[in-house]
Length: 279
Ligand SMILES: Nc1ncnc2c1ncn2[C@@H]1O[C@H](COP(=O)(O)OP(=O)(O)OP(=O)(O)O)[C@@H](O)[C@H]1O
Ligand SMILES: [Mg+2]
Image (cartoon, rainbow, N blue to C red):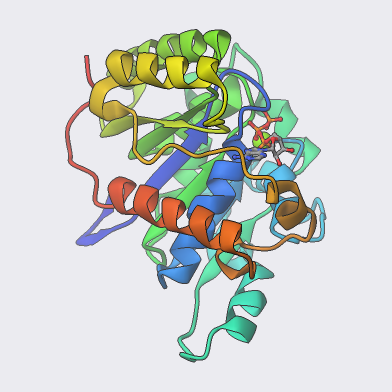
């Protein structure tokens, strides 16, 4: 989104299928942005608020995105953002003394009010209105619920780039293909500013022939839209999430390898080539 000469890149992470790793991929990208020193805002649009939990944010309805969406024109976002607890973890582990900016607007069940298939065009624009005057950040990441209902459409209407997460299974690959089509149609009707639709393959096991087959299939189907590197199944992932830790600051070799992959993915998403979603 261009605000005067200042450009804030808004990226939403979604999939129509549940449990494929949207929240995990969002948290990995946010961790990469934190470690890279980007000024970052996170919006947890899922009524289940898993990302808020994974980032150690105590849940309150007050200041949650559901509350703010009710009156987007009257809100100064900076009065409602909360400093993400990950900033403290980064500060403790980082000797550079560099000041990190990572803010979050937490999720809450209130958001569920907007997760309807019949959301009006005016309502779809609520998040865009809320973010319209935001200039404090380099990047905004939005974690979406698993549906193409009101909330995901609200996120897409606001985004410059959309990341679709897919597991290497038949239904997930087919679902992602349909979602890319839905994204192109949505973009044409509501959000001509959406620059890129990406696919990230998650939870890939090198020892599963079916997974290798599906990843090859995705490479053929999606071409450059499928981002490399793919993300393997990480055995420590749930432990890291359970500790509400950013992967870049978890002190194991597996976490370092995962962090490096998220750095690469962020590098590809950031300053993305400004072309419409592939036809
Ligand atoms: N690469 C991975 N390696 C290991 N576990 C993973 C990986 N990605 C996700 N998971 C685990 O899979 C589960 C579902 O992931 P996650 O919550 O990120 O999915 P989601 O798409 O956001 O789900 P929902 O649709 O409910 O929002 C979580 O327990 C998470 O820890
Ligand atoms: Mg989720």
